[in-house]
Image: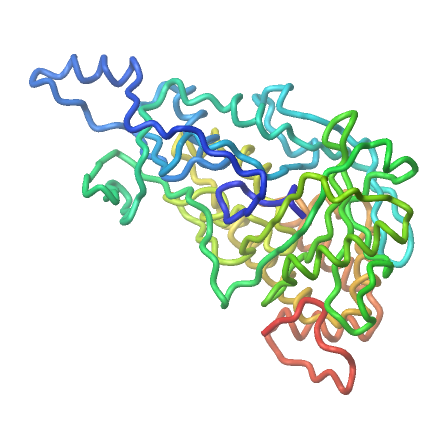
Length: 412
């Protein structure tokens, strides 16, 4: 679903707009440092941030707020973000500007085979205002591409080499056939055409025209403001994931079945990004640094919440967080191995967990106890056939299908 992905991962959007890139913009703090040096040379900056999607921009923004000297590096630093981002309201940091929130859903709905009302507030972010609110006015901005990154130095495509006390890679994840991906196809429609449609965190009902044994996808439906809604058919994870053309056909079929007309002139959002490959550590951040939840695709809120600590040079990957990261990877393996018909049953079981357990698994990046308890409770509540498959996938043991359809997420 488009709202899940970190903007510094590979998100394709048909509405993409580019502004004129800045070659090298130097802020007043940097000029003062240069003038103070007896030979006119700048002192070594505190931080270089490579990549200015939501994670990288948030890190640079919070670092300058702490008074650090920062270089923000991106091939197109003023490119406007076009993807849709969303989060659980309780995940967002206190410093985030209120105007960055475009819409709030107090209790969104989820469907497996039956309806579940989630007791947790969900927010859709205003992409343009989010980007603007993460001001880089205190940073030196360079429009160039990093080709080699080390802990204290980065080499640029132009041939320049920059040094800093610390270099952080926030460029997102590159696509690879070995990595599971999330894909989505969405349209933006007038809210009045969706009258009667509840905001949907996910809806796995089988009214999208897909055959029973085919890979599953779900409907994601959220307000963008008082006048518009994003309706998106989403492949949660696949290796390979469903193509956008397949998702488009499914979305049109589903909306037609629900009496929601389309004119063909609606703005379109395309999403494709890896959900695997992040490397937790002190010199990576955002999706590149393992902040993306591999079993859901969400990462923006986690990066925003950790930006202050990362800017301060704190350890944002204590032992508990690293274990949670591995457990989430096990959760992705379980999803990839699940037969299509069983996926709605799995989510029925998940959304019947206590709200605290749901919150721990979805958002508790450093909450090892909560994550373990949530996974244990979920496992115990699953039907036996799913417990066997989930256990085997978690341990990396192949499970024969015995004539059943292939996995719900098409693991290669």
